Length: 85
Image 1 (spheres, rainbow, N blue to C red):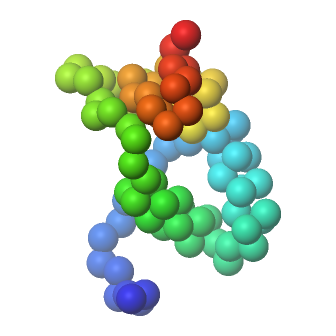
Image 2 (cartoon, rainbow, N blue to C red):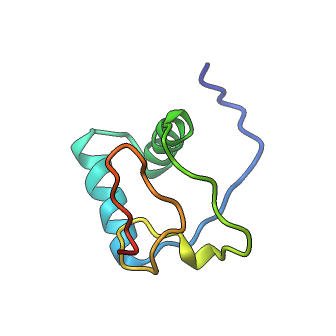
């Protein structure tokens, strides 16, 4: 399933805190690279359930990793917590 001929490139911008969170998770899980860690997190996120769809008019800045950006317009219905409250 690992395709070593990946032809698409995805570039994202992270805050210092988001990058530290990614690297901390990566080292804890002993992932070989940031790219591998991001692919694993994407796989887990895409398999997750219990999240509402983003509301129309959402901006990229509305979605943070560490909570330092504005509250996400999605909510985890499994634990009932709304980050904007």
